[in-house]
Length: 284
Image 1 (tube, rainbow, N blue to C red):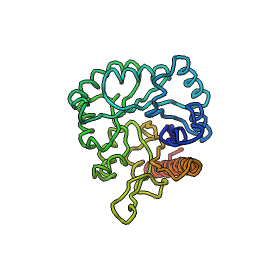
Image 2: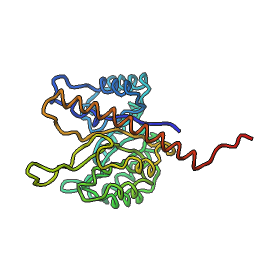
Image 3: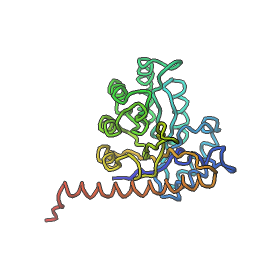
C-alpha cells in the first residue's frame, strides 16, 4: 500500500497570493511539499500554469521528480477545449490525475452537454493514462454528481471528494462521504466549522485546524480506503485572513503540519485495524 499524501496550492493559498510581500512561486511550493515529506503536490486553480512555456513546464516536472513528488492538476469546468488544454499541460508534467468541476448555472453547459463532453474525452484519458476527478461542491448536489459519474460509466472518471463544500447546500458531510466514497479517485482533506457572527447574527462557515472542526476524518478514511485503492489525499485549508500576512501565513503553515500529522496517524490506525480484521498471518 502506497501513501499518496501531499498538499496542494490551496494549502498555500495566502502564501502565494498578492496579500503577502513576497508571494511563493510554484518552485517554492514544491520545495515546501518536499520538506514536509509529501509524496504528491496538486497544482489546483493556479492560473500561471496555463501560460508556462514548454521549457518552464519541463523545469516543474524535473523539480518534482527530483523531490520525489507526483504532480496532479486542478481546474474547473467541462468544456472540451479547456480540458484538452489541461490535458496538454498534464502530458508535459507527467500528471495522471486532473481534478475539475461540473459547473452549472447561466452561461455554463447543461448537464447533458457536460456529460457528452466528458464522454468525448474518454479516448484521450485512456490514451494518456489520466483520470478525471470531478469535485463535490455546493452548486451540484452530491447525488446528482454521483449519477453523472455513473452515467459516464468509465473507471477513468470519478469524484474528487470534499464534503466541506457541500455543507453550503445543507448536505451533511457524512452523507456526502458515504454517497461518494465508492466513486472517489481523489480526496481533498480539510476541516471546517461554523462560528457565530458578531452580535450572534448568523454564522460563518470557514476552515478549522484539523481535528478541531466538524470533519470526521476517521470515518472519511474508513469509507474511502485511500491506501488500499491508491487514492491520493491532498491537504487544503479554508483559512480566513488573520489580520496581517505574518500571522496568517504562520497559521496556514501550522494547519498544514497538523493536518498531515493527523492524516498519517489516522492512516496508521486504519492499517492496524485492517490487520486485526484479517487476523494474524500464519507462518507455519
